[in-house]
Length: 294
Length: 296
Image 1 (cartoon, each protein chain N blue to C red):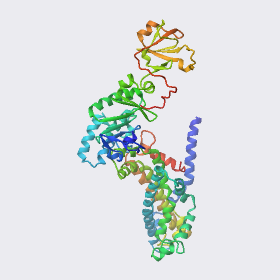
Image 2: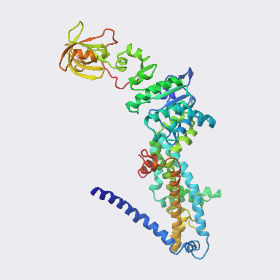
Image 3: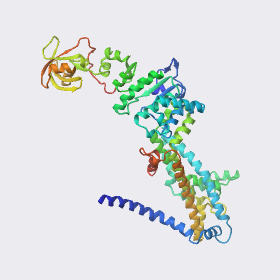
Image 4: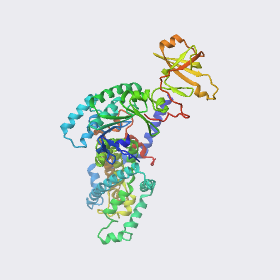
């Protein structure tokens, strides 16, 4: 992200925007808008002055600045807060103001660095939906970095999963979910559980009272009712292949009606079946998805 | 009850300390200066031994001229030094950091002697300068140098913590929005550090106005020629002209207080001053509170 913006220089590789090689250009000449994770608002300027900054340093005529600032403040719904200072705004308002400030220079690419990271869950969710609608209105290519998979799935048309600086897979949210190229993508995008060393989506795991071909014996550990979804935590019986204790734990996602029919309780003996058509891959010897980025 | 006592006890202790050390003596000066009326006071000062008014007026003008040269010099140097220390990693940074504090660490008399050693007529550069017709010691250049020397650290020490606290994100944001280096400095960096800078400039001014030790060696203390107001007050005191000394001291204190007041007023007018900020501690509060500590 910072390399695209020109705030850092890449060790190798080049940066292209709209087909133009911008690798050697200063940030100001790249035609980018950057929203920093903590917004980096100018604290000594009012909302109006913050948004006007990009035009002021370009010495645009006063009436043009006034007109465009008014437009953008209206767009991000801050028209009533123009005379306030950043310290007087709520987190969501600051985020929207940072967006307006970046958009006023009509960037070719808008860069959003964890735009919702500093907001509480509710505000974040609301802003996400708003950002998606805004994006359809202003039509500017936007790169958004996030550690929140759900956020990425919700906002983006295209996702790139990066793990330890390596690009794992690029595709639409649906492609990544349904056709992950490897276990890392599978476990990182959306929920996953491992059964006998293979990963599955928990909704592709079903639980039954009677054995079926290819089913695994297991005990119910806990049943969590999460509204429509019911999460069943399981411990598979060891198969004698010497797998470690941690590998025996799995979970299944059932809908409420199925769960009601089964009437599961902790300690119950069940048979676990995995859906054939579900995406799966060999579990890697080592799984470390904790420090990854999407 | 106990907490109440603790709270007021602390306040009393702080205020009492300030009163005994600062408020009462300064108040006494003001009282003594005007004890026999303003006109008498003026006459005492301007005409200490029935000679002329020029001694006081000259000292006042010299003091202001010196301050007008030394303070801007140190303001520019202080900001540049703070920027270098906050934004650049280079070998010798720690050395620069320590060197900036040197002027307040050594006695002003040492500063004066050192300047004479280098720029005096028999000094390293002094002889050469004298041949070019420039006299440093016992002259205005020497007075300015000594004043600037002793007041070097204040701006840097006030600005540096503010720079470190605000970080570089705002400057980077400005860069992505199309601002060049100068625009970034004038529009983002300088406004962000303005309270720290104002505080540093005030301290620098106060220090320049009040310098005695270094100047008593460098200036030569010639009445009506190389005597600043502080030196003049000291001179009057030595001459047992206490009335004149009192009034001179009062004028000196008044100028310094005026600078402080000016700062407060400019703070109150521009933007949201630190003590009016409704949301959290502002930057310059941090600057002020961290000034007393050495660099982090």
